[in-house]
Image 1 (tube, rainbow, N blue to C red):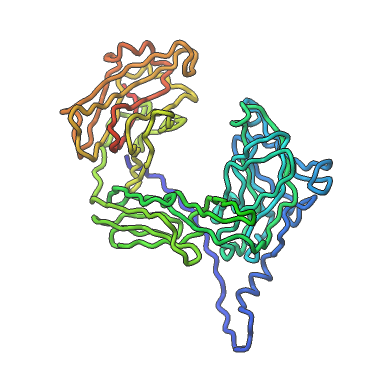
Image 2 (cartoon, one colour):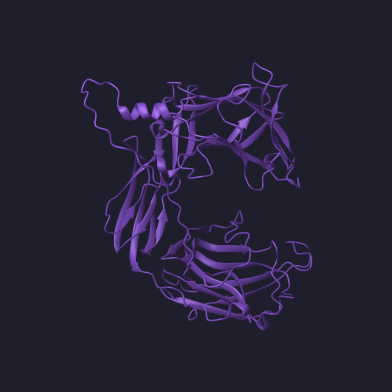
Length: 471
């Protein structure tokens, strides 16, 4: 349903216009202004921090804030380095280590460099989830990240290519990392970083960028729906001959719509559908075409689900813009290995819709905390099937209670499944489903409700809205 909360954040940078009368000047004045305002300092940490100021370390939420320190006994060809102690998965202070290093003050002009480099080693062979730069906890405009980096017990050099250095005229986000213990059975470890700096290597081959992970993807949308260009990567050939994939933020690319009357795309890769028809979104980086595309098939005006009429006091809402929702762990847990359903959620003029594509089954979990619905009498969900209804098509709605233990698989879990078929299921119309708890005999309790599972898809598309319990 319609979401009436609108958040907007914008910044405008105004530059004066200067008339240059000396026609023999060989240096552009704007370049001089950038040089004068933003330092070109390459070093971030060389035995100690360089030009970072006094307040530059910002841990991520949920990470262990004390994981990072400076080690004055260990270094690459020195006795000093950054030390990161990745915690055990059950550490009460944080289940992983992750943070950004941001310049305390004006950003840096990094246009002279083509890579961020550093040396790293670990207390044991591990795979570090993410290394990168460009995150400043503000716009995060020019992020670049490499993932799943293999780190051994000897110092090795890591190279993160800069996708387009001409963009980095005033960058504050010097470094970012995220490391967990998924590959070590939940046990912590330590790794060290030294000689962290930007360089002009001159031996990195120009990257081949891709959008939508290099695939030609089609989406069916409606007037007013916003979509995002995703899967933005670029592959660079490193000096050692290996290819390095870098995940990019969308601002590195320039986008174009083949039919702006149908769909427009802005500088951030946000696509807005305007009218019925088809438009193909493509991109370039440094003037070179990126592989992959996003085809928007706009089928016209979106029909909204019926607006709920129950009073908020009589509702426990899982997903609806009409009500206040309880905390939800996820709307798509992507339970491997059998699930194929992926999420492509969208919003139409503020009306948020769960969009499940390649739908076979999907789990919605709200177990932190579980929900006590003993005072409620019914479960409600609105579903919309945009494609044809295949013969024998079923939709099963499963309500799960985790029992007094409040955890999955605790031995006291119960569930009830209700199956719907045609003529209840129809195409191109919202179907409002209301299931009385009195008709769920297999649900032994509803004081620790924790999951809603939807099953029975045939690989098509299912929209969902207004998921709640009510009296």
